[in-house]
Amino acid sequence: MVPRNKLKILNDPIYGFITIPSELIFDIIEHRYFQRLRRISQMGLSYLVYPGAHHTRLLHALGCLHLMQSAVRVLRAKGVEISPKEEEALYIAILLHDVGHGPFSHAMEHSIVEGVSHERLSILFMNQINEEFNGKLDLAIAIFKGEYPRIFLCQLISSQLDMDRLDYLKRDSFYTGVVEGNINSERLISMLNVMNDELMVEEKGIYSVEEFLLARRLMYWQVYLHKTGVAAEQLLIRVLKRAKELFGAGHQLYLGNALEYFLETKVTEADFTPEILETFASLDDSDVLAAMKQWSHHEDFVLSTLSRMILNRDLLKVVISKEPPSEEALASHRHQLAAKYDLTPHEAGYFVFSGDITNTAYRMEEEGIKILYKNGNVRDVVEASDHFNLKALASPVTKFYICYPKPKD
Image (cartoon, rainbow, N blue to C red):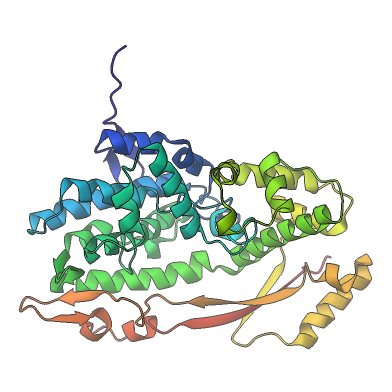
């Protein structure tokens, strides 16, 4: 048998050619858990706002791999020692950083498995893959969990200027067409350095950091927290909530095996055996879409209506304000809806609800982005910047929303 060439080259619409640097990386990419990311959307239901936003978690992970390769090259060229084992561990960690996402990414993170974040699920997946690869992921897992003593390696995976953010801002900008998010990720990477084992940005890169933070703020308001996208995400959460409620009451529902398991079984992180993890791994966007297509014809008014609203993009009206809506306003909308369709107050609550959204481009209370001056001094980017708006970007902005059905003509 002819040996298989595992040092492949992939073509990415953002960066062009991406190389697979080792046979181990190739084998991890080929693993069923990673390939599942082809069927998990990167931006949930954002395609209901931006029709081009159909890209996947797999594309994002491969983009992160490419940027990590660039970061390793840049840092080594500046005299930073990164061993071959550390290099490969970085690639594995960034490839698998999102492997724990469920259907539609963040939209259903706490709906299918309650109280378990995708980061924790990613670790469970990585541990399982590690067993199959006889411990070859040990170092990658330590870096991913932030437990490795070389801090800058962990920061490349998770920080306020990590490879994850550098890819998703640029990629999501490309697929949505929102040009404000089109950061120069390669320029930012070229300005990286390490001092006292921490990741820094050289002084001449400060304007690129400012542009990155501004792009992050704008992308959150225009894309990730777009009011229509927020409404669609909340409807999806409520579809699953209603399905769980009906299923628990003995109603017949169309369900795939994996979706049925998680609707009828409350699973905590401690419950995740390899068998349950395998069941979770079989869940993806298509399971939820197929279920909603069936549920759109269900006799239950709430489940069928919610499902059709998402499938047909007939979404709720969303009103954003600086103050939370009054209980009187919520009660009024619920009463009108209940009277019109003969619903209980509980059922009307699936269609009339409120919440809040918060946008913080930079968190000063966390491990910040540090600017390294030529004389060796180090300052936080907010202190170093002369940009009048950067301090404002570090302040969280919270807005409130109310959702209710649009009046029909």
